[in-house]
Length: 67
Image (tube, rainbow, N blue to C red; front, side):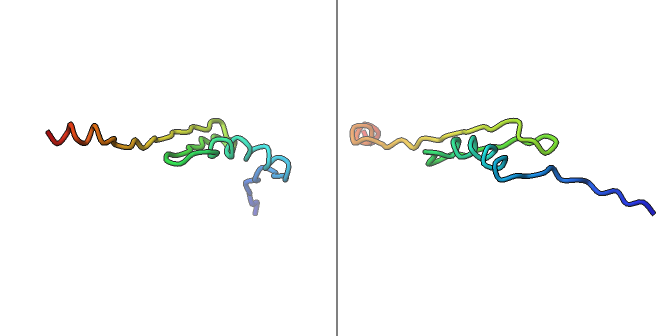
């Protein structure tokens, strides 16, 4: 009987550091939002960063809205 096993790609500490560097960069300074990592055939092909900015309402805007 023949057994077929899928081989996982080899991982090395230096490879992991190199792969994580752009992900760390995308996360750096992100307060609100998300980082989306696209993987094809076990390889990271794209990293998207979407940042949401929370705006503070000012007193002038609040006063105008109440009138």
